[in-house]
Every structure is written in structure tokens, then in C-alpha cells.
Length: 81
Image 1 (cartoon, rainbow, N blue to C red):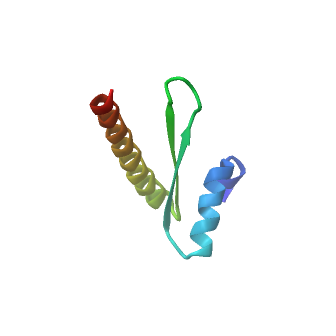
Image 2: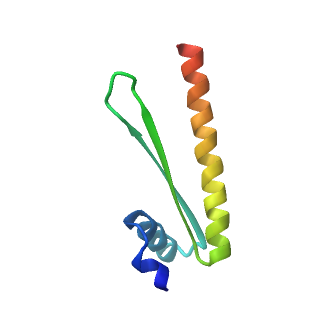
């Protein structure tokens, strides 16, 4: 597969997880809290699919999860702020 040469280490880790656990789609979610005055949060998603179609589906679902978490935390900040 030619795409693997340009894939990020995160995508390759998702691919390895898929192979190890016999999955056709994988979404990895990670959250970093940046130690700053505003306590900024960074939410990252990485997705992998066993085919181009499944890769697109996994990315779509990863984007939904990421957006939902961002909206959840923004509501919490408004409520607590």
C-alpha cells in the first residue's frame, strides 16, 4: 500500500491496532490539557479503515465524536464560567 509511506505515526498505530485485534475500522481519541492560564484543551482523533471507503467512514465517525466532545466542553465552560 503506497499510502503507508506518507502516513503519520498515529495512523500507522491505528492500522496496527486494527490488524492486531482484527478490526476493519479504528478511531483513536486523545485529549491533551495544555497547562496554560486558559486551561486550553486539545482533542485529537486519528482514524483508520481497511479500505478507502472504510477509511472515509471511520474519519466521518471520528469527526462526529470530536465535535460532540468539543461542544460538551464548551457548554460546560459557559455553564461554569
